Image (cartoon, rainbow over the protein chains, first blue to last red):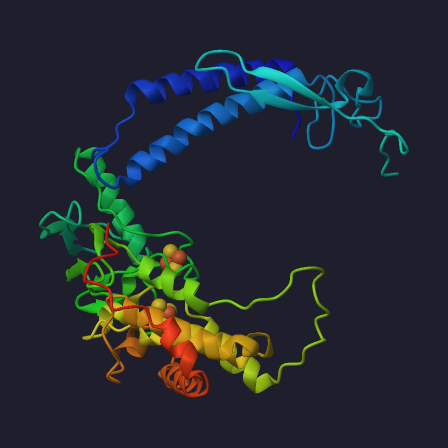
Length: 123
Length: 266
Ligand code: SF4
Ligand code: FES
Protein backbone atom coordinates (compact mmCIF):
# COMPACT_ATOMS: atom_id res chain seq x y z
CA UNK A 1 0.00 0.00 0.00
CA UNK A 2 1.40 3.36 -0.90
CA UNK A 3 0.25 6.91 -0.24
CA UNK A 4 0.61 10.18 -2.08
CA UNK A 5 -0.03 13.75 -0.92
CA UNK A 6 -2.73 14.12 -3.53
CA UNK A 7 -4.42 10.83 -2.61
CA UNK A 8 -4.45 11.77 1.06
CA UNK A 9 -5.95 15.17 0.30
CA UNK A 10 -8.71 13.47 -1.65
CA UNK A 11 -9.26 11.02 1.20
CA UNK A 12 -9.61 13.81 3.77
CA UNK A 13 -12.16 15.53 1.53
CA UNK A 14 -14.15 12.34 1.04
CA UNK A 15 -14.13 11.49 4.73
CA UNK A 16 -15.36 14.97 5.61
CA UNK A 17 -18.17 14.66 3.08
CA UNK A 18 -19.12 11.23 4.44
CA UNK A 19 -19.05 12.54 7.98
CA UNK A 20 -21.25 15.44 7.04
CA UNK A 21 -23.67 13.07 5.37
CA UNK A 22 -23.62 10.83 8.44
CA UNK A 23 -24.51 13.70 10.76
CA UNK A 24 -27.26 14.92 8.43
CA UNK A 25 -28.87 11.59 7.63
CA UNK A 26 -28.14 9.21 10.49
CA UNK A 27 -31.16 7.39 11.86
CA UNK A 28 -30.84 6.01 15.36
CA UNK A 29 -33.90 4.04 16.40
CA UNK A 30 -35.01 4.14 20.01
CA UNK A 31 -34.19 6.80 22.54
CA UNK A 32 -31.42 7.75 24.93
CA UNK A 33 -33.56 6.96 27.97
CA UNK A 34 -32.96 3.24 28.08
CA UNK A 35 -30.29 0.84 26.87
CA UNK A 36 -29.81 1.59 23.18
CA UNK A 37 -27.30 -0.58 21.35
CA UNK A 38 -27.77 1.39 18.13
CA UNK A 39 -26.88 4.62 19.83
CA UNK A 40 -23.66 2.95 20.98
CA UNK A 41 -22.92 1.86 17.42
CA UNK A 42 -23.70 5.30 15.97
CA UNK A 43 -21.31 6.83 18.52
CA UNK A 44 -18.60 4.46 17.41
CA UNK A 45 -19.12 5.30 13.74
CA UNK A 46 -18.87 9.00 14.60
CA UNK A 47 -15.58 8.34 16.43
CA UNK A 48 -14.20 6.40 13.49
CA UNK A 49 -14.89 9.27 11.11
CA UNK A 50 -12.76 11.51 13.29
CA UNK A 51 -10.06 8.90 13.65
CA UNK A 52 -9.99 8.16 9.92
CA UNK A 53 -9.64 11.83 9.08
CA UNK A 54 -6.88 12.26 11.62
CA UNK A 55 -4.95 9.28 10.26
CA UNK A 56 -5.02 10.85 6.80
CA UNK A 57 -3.98 14.25 8.16
CA UNK A 58 -1.10 12.64 10.02
CA UNK A 59 0.00 10.66 6.96
CA UNK A 60 -0.27 13.80 4.82
CA UNK A 61 1.87 15.79 7.20
CA UNK A 62 4.69 13.24 7.23
CA UNK A 63 6.43 13.82 3.92
CA UNK A 64 8.72 10.83 4.21
CA UNK A 65 8.41 7.07 4.05
CA UNK A 66 8.82 5.28 7.34
CA UNK A 67 7.81 1.83 8.49
CA UNK A 68 4.40 0.92 7.10
CA UNK A 69 3.93 4.48 5.86
CA UNK A 70 5.17 4.57 2.27
CA UNK A 71 4.84 7.91 0.51
CA UNK A 72 5.47 7.59 -3.21
CA UNK A 73 7.15 10.99 -3.24
CA UNK A 74 9.79 9.69 -0.86
CA UNK A 75 11.59 6.66 -2.21
CA UNK A 76 15.10 5.70 -3.22
CA UNK A 77 16.11 5.14 -6.82
CA UNK A 78 15.43 1.45 -6.20
CA UNK A 79 11.93 2.03 -4.86
CA UNK A 80 12.79 1.52 -1.18
CA UNK A 81 11.33 3.67 1.60
CA UNK A 82 13.28 6.89 2.00
CA UNK A 83 13.21 8.48 5.46
CA UNK A 84 13.82 12.14 6.13
CA UNK A 85 15.36 12.06 9.58
CA UNK A 86 16.30 15.72 9.47
CA UNK A 87 12.68 16.82 9.41
CA UNK A 88 10.68 13.93 10.81
CA UNK A 89 12.55 12.46 13.77
CA UNK A 90 9.54 12.82 16.00
CA UNK A 91 6.39 11.09 17.09
CA UNK A 92 3.33 13.10 16.22
CA UNK A 93 0.74 13.54 18.96
CA UNK A 94 -2.42 15.23 17.78
CA UNK A 95 -4.64 17.27 20.07
CA UNK A 96 -8.36 17.71 19.47
CA UNK A 97 -9.38 21.36 19.19
CA UNK A 98 -13.07 21.08 18.50
CA UNK A 99 -15.26 20.04 15.60
CA UNK A 100 -14.12 21.43 12.28
CA UNK A 101 -10.92 22.84 13.79
CA UNK A 102 -7.62 21.49 12.51
CA UNK A 103 -5.98 19.31 15.18
CA UNK A 104 -2.93 20.60 16.98
CA UNK A 105 0.37 18.88 16.36
CA UNK A 106 2.70 18.25 19.27
CA UNK A 107 6.06 16.79 18.39
CA UNK A 108 7.78 14.33 20.66
CA UNK A 109 11.34 14.43 19.41
CA UNK A 110 13.24 11.20 18.98
CA UNK A 111 16.82 11.48 20.12
CA UNK A 112 19.35 8.80 19.42
CA UNK A 113 22.53 8.80 21.50
CA UNK A 114 24.21 5.47 21.00
CA UNK A 115 22.73 3.83 17.96
CA UNK A 116 21.89 6.05 15.05
CA UNK A 117 19.23 5.31 12.47
CA UNK A 118 20.49 4.28 9.05
CA UNK A 119 18.99 3.13 5.80
CA UNK A 120 17.26 -0.19 6.24
CA UNK A 121 18.33 -2.83 3.77
CA UNK A 122 16.85 -6.28 3.18
CA UNK A 123 19.45 -7.21 0.62
CA UNK B 1 -36.59 -20.84 4.96
CA UNK B 2 -39.51 -19.13 6.64
CA UNK B 3 -40.05 -18.55 10.30
CA UNK B 4 -42.24 -16.67 12.69
CA UNK B 5 -40.11 -15.25 15.45
CA UNK B 6 -42.18 -14.60 18.53
CA UNK B 7 -39.87 -12.43 20.59
CA UNK B 8 -40.11 -11.06 24.10
CA UNK B 9 -40.00 -7.26 23.93
CA UNK B 10 -39.54 -5.30 27.12
CA UNK B 11 -38.24 -1.76 27.21
CA UNK B 12 -36.70 -1.90 30.65
CA UNK B 13 -36.75 -3.75 33.92
CA UNK B 14 -39.63 -1.72 35.27
CA UNK B 15 -41.87 -1.82 32.24
CA UNK B 16 -44.18 -4.63 31.26
CA UNK B 17 -43.06 -6.89 28.45
CA UNK B 18 -44.94 -8.83 25.80
CA UNK B 19 -44.38 -11.26 22.97
CA UNK B 20 -44.44 -9.79 19.48
CA UNK B 21 -44.51 -11.96 16.35
CA UNK B 22 -42.29 -11.14 13.41
CA UNK B 23 -42.73 -13.18 10.23
CA UNK B 24 -39.49 -13.76 8.31
CA UNK B 25 -38.92 -15.25 4.91
CA UNK B 26 -35.79 -15.79 2.89
CA UNK B 27 -33.86 -16.98 5.90
CA UNK B 28 -30.68 -18.74 4.84
CA UNK B 29 -30.24 -22.14 6.48
CA UNK B 30 -26.57 -21.26 7.05
CA UNK B 31 -27.36 -18.20 9.14
CA UNK B 32 -26.81 -18.41 12.85
CA UNK B 33 -29.70 -17.61 15.14
CA UNK B 34 -28.03 -14.28 15.93
CA UNK B 35 -27.60 -13.44 12.26
CA UNK B 36 -31.28 -14.15 11.80
CA UNK B 37 -31.96 -11.55 14.51
CA UNK B 38 -29.54 -9.16 12.76
CA UNK B 39 -31.56 -9.46 9.57
CA UNK B 40 -34.77 -8.91 11.47
CA UNK B 41 -33.26 -5.85 13.16
CA UNK B 42 -32.25 -4.38 9.79
CA UNK B 43 -35.84 -4.60 8.58
CA UNK B 44 -37.14 -3.17 11.86
CA UNK B 45 -34.78 -0.21 11.55
CA UNK B 46 -35.86 0.48 7.98
CA UNK B 47 -39.45 0.47 9.20
CA UNK B 48 -38.50 2.94 11.93
CA UNK B 49 -39.11 0.44 14.72
CA UNK B 50 -36.76 -0.31 17.55
CA UNK B 51 -34.51 -3.31 16.94
CA UNK B 52 -34.46 -6.26 19.31
CA UNK B 53 -31.73 -5.82 21.92
CA UNK B 54 -29.62 -8.92 22.48
CA UNK B 55 -26.16 -9.55 23.86
CA UNK B 56 -23.38 -10.83 21.61
CA UNK B 57 -19.69 -10.44 21.16
CA UNK B 58 -17.36 -13.11 19.76
CA UNK B 59 -20.01 -15.02 17.78
CA UNK B 60 -17.82 -18.07 17.90
CA UNK B 61 -18.98 -19.69 21.10
CA UNK B 62 -16.18 -18.59 23.38
CA UNK B 63 -17.20 -15.40 25.16
CA UNK B 64 -20.49 -16.35 26.78
CA UNK B 65 -22.23 -13.07 25.92
CA UNK B 66 -25.05 -14.47 23.88
CA UNK B 67 -27.93 -16.58 25.03
CA UNK B 68 -31.69 -16.76 25.17
CA UNK B 69 -34.40 -19.35 25.39
CA UNK B 70 -35.81 -20.79 22.15
CA UNK B 71 -39.05 -22.75 22.41
CA UNK B 72 -38.53 -23.32 26.10
CA UNK B 73 -34.94 -24.55 25.85
CA UNK B 74 -31.96 -22.41 26.81
CA UNK B 75 -29.76 -21.94 23.70
CA UNK B 76 -32.29 -23.89 21.62
CA UNK B 77 -32.71 -27.51 20.66
CA UNK B 78 -29.15 -28.49 19.75
CA UNK B 79 -27.11 -30.09 22.51
CA UNK B 80 -23.85 -28.39 23.49
CA UNK B 81 -24.53 -25.49 21.11
CA UNK B 82 -24.76 -21.83 21.96
CA UNK B 83 -27.11 -19.52 20.05
CA UNK B 84 -24.35 -17.79 18.07
CA UNK B 85 -23.29 -21.21 16.79
CA UNK B 86 -26.80 -22.48 16.22
CA UNK B 87 -27.60 -22.39 12.50
CA UNK B 88 -31.12 -22.06 11.20
CA UNK B 89 -30.98 -25.36 9.33
CA UNK B 90 -31.61 -27.05 12.66
CA UNK B 91 -35.18 -25.79 12.57
CA UNK B 92 -37.99 -26.73 10.22
CA UNK B 93 -39.05 -24.07 7.73
CA UNK B 94 -42.41 -22.61 8.72
CA UNK B 95 -41.78 -23.16 12.43
CA UNK B 96 -42.67 -20.61 15.05
CA UNK B 97 -39.71 -19.87 17.31
CA UNK B 98 -40.55 -18.45 20.71
CA UNK B 99 -37.58 -16.42 21.88
CA UNK B 100 -37.32 -15.08 25.40
CA UNK B 101 -34.58 -13.93 27.76
CA UNK B 102 -33.09 -15.89 30.65
CA UNK B 103 -35.68 -15.80 33.37
CA UNK B 104 -34.15 -15.94 36.82
CA UNK B 105 -34.39 -13.80 39.94
CA UNK B 106 -30.63 -13.38 39.99
CA UNK B 107 -30.58 -12.11 36.39
CA UNK B 108 -32.79 -9.01 36.31
CA UNK B 109 -33.88 -8.05 32.83
CA UNK B 110 -32.26 -4.99 31.25
CA UNK B 111 -34.02 -4.89 27.89
CA UNK B 112 -35.66 -7.36 25.47
CA UNK B 113 -33.30 -10.37 25.52
CA UNK B 114 -30.56 -8.79 27.64
CA UNK B 115 -30.29 -9.63 31.32
CA UNK B 116 -27.91 -8.42 34.00
CA UNK B 117 -25.51 -11.25 34.84
CA UNK B 118 -23.30 -9.35 37.26
CA UNK B 119 -24.22 -11.83 39.98
CA UNK B 120 -21.87 -14.22 38.13
CA UNK B 121 -19.11 -11.62 38.20
CA UNK B 122 -19.51 -11.25 41.95
CA UNK B 123 -19.15 -15.00 42.41
CA UNK B 124 -15.94 -14.91 40.38
CA UNK B 125 -14.67 -11.94 42.38
CA UNK B 126 -15.25 -13.89 45.57
CA UNK B 127 -12.62 -16.49 44.67
CA UNK B 128 -12.39 -17.37 40.99
CA UNK B 129 -8.70 -16.60 40.74
CA UNK B 130 -5.30 -17.71 41.97
CA UNK B 131 -2.88 -15.42 43.79
CA UNK B 132 0.66 -15.43 42.46
CA UNK B 133 3.43 -12.90 42.43
CA UNK B 134 3.79 -11.72 38.89
CA UNK B 135 7.25 -11.51 37.44
CA UNK B 136 8.85 -13.43 34.65
CA UNK B 137 6.73 -16.17 33.15
CA UNK B 138 7.53 -19.39 35.03
CA UNK B 139 9.18 -22.28 33.29
CA UNK B 140 6.47 -24.24 31.53
CA UNK B 141 7.69 -27.55 32.92
CA UNK B 142 8.39 -26.37 36.47
CA UNK B 143 5.00 -27.52 37.75
CA UNK B 144 4.01 -30.89 36.39
CA UNK B 145 0.32 -31.58 35.93
CA UNK B 146 -0.85 -35.10 35.24
CA UNK B 147 -2.88 -35.71 32.11
CA UNK B 148 -5.94 -36.78 34.12
CA UNK B 149 -5.91 -33.63 36.22
CA UNK B 150 -5.26 -31.42 33.21
CA UNK B 151 -8.17 -32.98 31.34
CA UNK B 152 -10.51 -32.73 34.30
CA UNK B 153 -9.57 -29.09 34.92
CA UNK B 154 -9.97 -28.26 31.24
CA UNK B 155 -13.40 -29.88 31.12
CA UNK B 156 -14.48 -27.49 33.87
CA UNK B 157 -12.54 -24.50 32.53
CA UNK B 158 -14.53 -24.44 29.29
CA UNK B 159 -17.48 -22.84 31.11
CA UNK B 160 -18.02 -19.50 29.38
CA UNK B 161 -20.35 -18.04 31.99
CA UNK B 162 -23.35 -17.72 29.69
CA UNK B 163 -25.95 -18.34 32.39
CA UNK B 164 -27.99 -20.97 30.55
CA UNK B 165 -27.65 -23.34 33.50
CA UNK B 166 -29.37 -20.83 35.77
CA UNK B 167 -32.09 -20.08 33.24
CA UNK B 168 -32.82 -23.77 32.71
CA UNK B 169 -32.88 -24.70 36.39
CA UNK B 170 -36.37 -24.69 37.95
CA UNK B 171 -34.66 -23.42 41.12
CA UNK B 172 -32.61 -20.79 39.29
CA UNK B 173 -29.49 -22.29 40.83
CA UNK B 174 -25.99 -21.37 39.71
CA UNK B 175 -24.44 -24.56 41.08
CA UNK B 176 -23.13 -25.72 37.69
CA UNK B 177 -21.40 -22.42 36.98
CA UNK B 178 -19.93 -22.01 40.46
CA UNK B 179 -18.97 -25.68 40.54
CA UNK B 180 -17.17 -25.34 37.20
CA UNK B 181 -15.10 -22.43 38.49
CA UNK B 182 -14.27 -24.09 41.81
CA UNK B 183 -13.38 -27.39 40.13
CA UNK B 184 -11.30 -25.83 37.37
CA UNK B 185 -8.96 -24.03 39.76
CA UNK B 186 -8.99 -26.50 42.65
CA UNK B 187 -7.84 -29.42 40.53
CA UNK B 188 -4.66 -27.70 39.35
CA UNK B 189 -1.56 -27.32 41.55
CA UNK B 190 -1.56 -23.53 41.07
CA UNK B 191 -5.07 -23.33 42.52
CA UNK B 192 -4.60 -25.73 45.40
CA UNK B 193 -3.20 -23.31 48.04
CA UNK B 194 -6.44 -21.30 48.00
CA UNK B 195 -8.76 -24.21 47.47
CA UNK B 196 -10.50 -24.07 50.86
CA UNK B 197 -11.01 -20.33 50.91
CA UNK B 198 -12.15 -20.36 47.32
CA UNK B 199 -14.89 -22.89 47.98
CA UNK B 200 -16.04 -21.07 51.12
CA UNK B 201 -16.11 -17.62 49.56
CA UNK B 202 -17.60 -18.52 46.22
CA UNK B 203 -20.35 -20.65 47.75
CA UNK B 204 -21.07 -17.90 50.28
CA UNK B 205 -21.40 -15.35 47.48
CA UNK B 206 -23.58 -17.72 45.46
CA UNK B 207 -25.87 -18.04 48.48
CA UNK B 208 -25.95 -14.29 49.01
CA UNK B 209 -27.18 -13.72 45.44
CA UNK B 210 -30.74 -14.48 44.43
CA UNK B 211 -29.98 -17.96 43.10
CA UNK B 212 -31.91 -20.98 44.31
CA UNK B 213 -30.39 -24.18 45.60
CA UNK B 214 -29.34 -27.20 43.60
CA UNK B 215 -31.62 -30.23 43.90
CA UNK B 216 -29.79 -32.41 41.37
CA UNK B 217 -32.28 -32.01 38.54
CA UNK B 218 -29.64 -31.91 35.84
CA UNK B 219 -31.35 -29.61 33.34
CA UNK B 220 -28.30 -27.32 33.63
CA UNK B 221 -25.90 -29.82 32.15
CA UNK B 222 -28.47 -30.67 29.47
CA UNK B 223 -28.53 -27.12 28.12
CA UNK B 224 -24.91 -26.17 28.85
CA UNK B 225 -23.30 -25.18 25.54
CA UNK B 226 -19.99 -26.49 26.83
CA UNK B 227 -21.30 -29.76 28.22
CA UNK B 228 -20.11 -29.08 31.77
CA UNK B 229 -20.95 -32.23 33.72
CA UNK B 230 -22.80 -32.48 37.03
CA UNK B 231 -19.59 -33.81 38.52
CA UNK B 232 -18.42 -30.23 39.10
CA UNK B 233 -21.28 -29.74 41.53
CA UNK B 234 -20.11 -32.79 43.46
CA UNK B 235 -16.57 -31.37 43.48
CA UNK B 236 -17.90 -28.03 44.74
CA UNK B 237 -19.88 -29.70 47.51
CA UNK B 238 -16.91 -31.82 48.51
CA UNK B 239 -14.55 -28.85 48.56
CA UNK B 240 -17.06 -26.80 50.50
CA UNK B 241 -17.68 -29.53 53.07
CA UNK B 242 -14.00 -30.22 53.45
CA UNK B 243 -13.19 -26.53 53.85
CA UNK B 244 -15.96 -25.89 56.34
CA UNK B 245 -14.71 -28.78 58.43
CA UNK B 246 -11.17 -27.52 58.40
CA UNK B 247 -11.88 -23.81 58.67
CA UNK B 248 -14.94 -23.37 60.78
CA UNK B 249 -13.87 -19.96 62.01
CA UNK B 250 -13.33 -18.80 58.41
CA UNK B 251 -16.76 -20.09 57.52
CA UNK B 252 -18.41 -17.80 60.01
CA UNK B 253 -16.42 -14.88 58.74
CA UNK B 254 -17.20 -15.51 55.09
CA UNK B 255 -20.96 -15.89 55.08
CA UNK B 256 -22.35 -12.40 54.61
CA UNK B 257 -25.63 -11.60 56.30
CA UNK B 258 -28.56 -12.72 54.20
CA UNK B 259 -29.26 -9.92 51.80
CA UNK B 260 -32.58 -8.22 51.72
CA UNK B 261 -34.27 -9.23 48.52
CA UNK B 262 -33.45 -6.87 45.66
CA UNK B 263 -30.95 -4.83 47.65
CA UNK B 264 -28.25 -5.18 45.03
CA UNK B 265 -30.45 -4.06 42.20
CA UNK B 266 -30.10 -0.61 40.83
S1 SF4 C 1 -21.88 -24.05 33.23
FE1 SF4 C 1 -22.45 -24.12 31.06
S2 SF4 C 1 -24.48 -23.20 31.00
FE2 SF4 C 1 -23.58 -22.62 32.96
S3 SF4 C 1 -22.58 -20.64 32.62
FE3 SF4 C 1 -21.00 -22.22 32.28
S4 SF4 C 1 -21.10 -22.61 30.07
FE4 SF4 C 1 -23.00 -21.53 30.58
S1 FES D 1 -21.37 -14.31 21.06
FE1 FES D 1 -19.66 -15.08 22.21
S2 FES D 1 -20.41 -17.02 22.82
FE2 FES D 1 -22.01 -16.34 21.53
